[in-house]
Length: 216
Image (tube, rainbow, N blue to C red; front, top):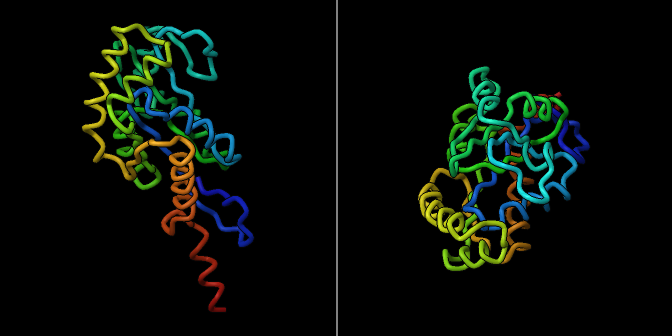
């Protein structure tokens, strides 16, 4: 839905941005997402539904909406998800109604989803989707970060590392690919991408009227 561009003296209208961040687990995506949200009042996080158990420190409705498998399947049947995927024996899905509500309120939407979800979202919304993939400096450093995080067992870390290789192989399905050598620098680049995409000509639905007015 078209809405105002922030700090826009010409009162242009634009279509909202569906901004996707993807990365292997431990590559810094969540940190960058938090910094983006803190710096942008026009950006709101899409909170996914999941069937996985809640981890210590997580809050239902903030980190994820935690539901059982039966409820998740019911939501799939009712077409309540924009996209959903099966990851590590659990399911994750983006609620359609929430995203539509955010766009209707004049905000852009931030997605923390994997390559499967990014692909499905792009098939649905096309040009309104901006896909950013974040790479770790190396798989060795990624492994060290997962160990240091101390939230998963050795078996889960091994599974995440195996999945990381598969996830990286889908890098070419993204519009932007960045290496997170330094989280603050990577964040600044991601933020620059978001700001540039917001003023892309194809999104400025009010631009035509302004151009016509120049000729009066």
